[in-house]
Length: 428
Image 1: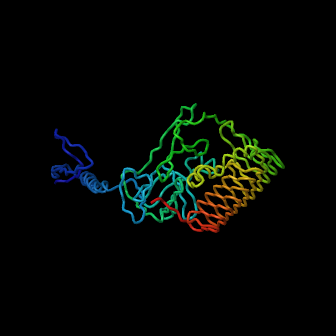
Image 2: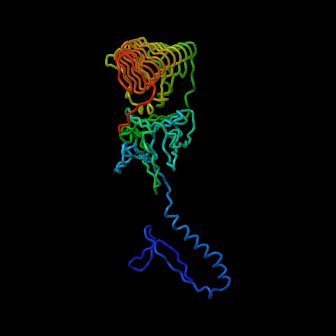
Image 3: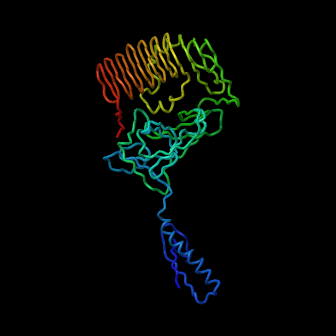
């Protein structure tokens, strides 16, 4: 009796066999069943033959197994072009890579700014934050989110770059290995020999690198930064002042009147971890330094048109939250989130403004919800509401602009402009 057993083998010059991945040849094993003792014969029929059959059936299936999946994004109407760099954006096809941070808006209005853990057949697995330290800083826990591809809407990356998933074909491919951008490690401080993990953050021009320290995300500039200060084991106790207090200060919350040069808490500077200040009531600022700042023309914050920069460095990273009325006699400039009414003498440059902002000459906010009014210029990265001034500009507008010249992502018009739906260019 001959039993064929298919094994992956090849013969070397010395006449020995070795297992290979790419060649298969049959090996015939000959048995004279009649000469076998009865106990051995029973064992042969009950154990040996089922084992051989199992191996034979499993062998072709093993060759077809794939342990991973990849996702290729291809703009509709474009042919696939295989290039050496399939990570950077291209209308002719690029892949989403695991271990990379993506900023994605879902169709259900949920925003994801986390690491891509894994690609499945029709689903992407993300973390809700980069790591547990950033999650704790945002009073949350690190978790994994399964996102079906059909629920993806927009992906933000870099300067004014927005990718609409409806304009792209999502092609899931089985693969022996996943597409992964490996993490890098670098020294961050001149007085610290430890190496810190750098994580890729996706931009349409390629990967920027970020790192986490003390629960916050920072851009990696390519060289060690300032000396590191040790963080104490115990946090400073929460401090609150009622009725009135001065700014800047070393408290966490003021209920009533905040009066001073600028509203900011210096508590935590000694451990390189600045705490935020919350003012509930009235904030009155008289900052003489603003005279020199205004002479230099501080009309914007950094990267005013970059949605990617806002989501990475600005969003939920305010140094001061003002709830109520804010009055800047000369100007209001800072990492502020203002909710209510803000009046600025010459200019207002804040991170987020929700309510009414009235300024003499210039208004800027990364996010402006409500009314922006200025005699000269209003500008916002994201504007939801009304802009009134001689010149109005919004990178992403949901509302109306009234002025001599009005600019948004859909069009530029004199006197009146509007936008209520999305219209972004992807660069392809």
